[in-house]
Amino acid sequence: MIGLLFALACHPAVEAEPVAAAVGEAFVPTDVQADMIRRLSMRDGAQPCAEVEAGSVDAASDLQVIVQRVELPPVVPMRAAECLIAKGDVAEGELIRWMSGEDTRGLAMLLADRIDTLQAPLAQRVVASGLAGPHAEVVRARVLKSAAPELRALAGGSL
Image (cartoon, rainbow, N blue to C red; front, side):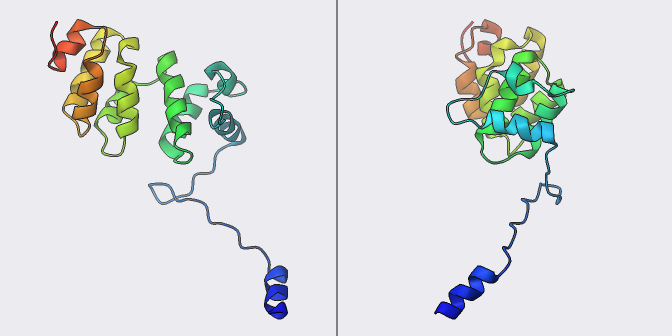
């Protein structure tokens, strides 16, 4: 028994393998992205977006990478997405992908909750994609709470 404990104590530590990304390569954040991830993952709530973005030369790109590549803790990509939505730093195609992707239910819910922050024509296109996508049920329920009557109408609500 002592020999086994000695062998285990003397054996070099095995490093954990990095989590593979969807495309088969490990995600290794830059130092700036790692700092942003740390700020977004704070238990008592993330720091304000301006503080999260401090130190980044291209905060929108860094936040988009975090949304797309960070899986754990799950609050990190959601908080990064909140910052992007709040600043209007998300391309329409990415918003549509959040609404229509099979693996983006949380992002679709977040976006549907924040739909009133988008310009009306964009919001209508995003809602339409969400209602036609795999998360239609949760998108509809959230859009029905929108302050915009035209968005509620898209979701089957009254004007």
